Length: 190
Figure 1: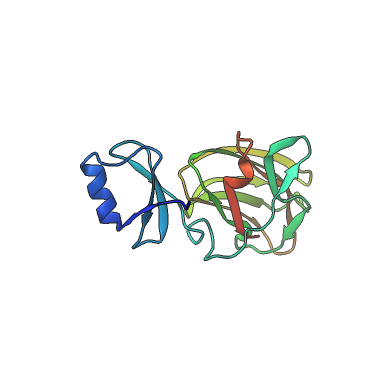
Figure 2: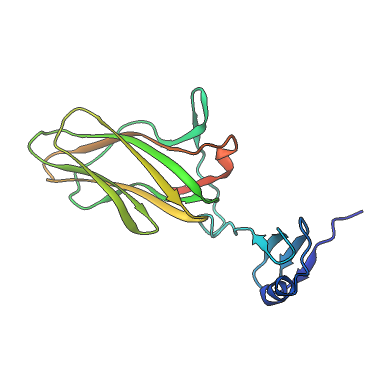
């Protein structure tokens, strides 16, 4: 016996919802978008994200590294990465949250000169959320609790204040309070 899934356009599914005709837990295939949805009440449903919306046109996600002793912490940048560019450079680009919630972002950064400023910043959906600045030559711990919507795009960038010195970043982690965290975040460029 196979799995039966009702099929129809998004408009047809919306019409079923408006008529209180959805079934809780029933799968629906939205034919004009090639995506699945599930009924959450008689008049609401939750549709799934396509892989291209999760961060990259069908490409495979970059593997995450589980932090020792913490199954909810994922790191895409464990070693130090530096730049001498005075324009912002991506440390991590196109990290998508597949569910809504709060993500804790932690990182360390420093410069190689106490004379010039180095910046580390976090963007959500293309808008700067925070920018951290340092003139120190010792690593500084940074933490941000970021509320994201489903499919939220997170980017972490850094730059040097002067091209004659380097700004370094390391230990960049994304943490969510969920034992299934690996299925909630996806990165497609580093």
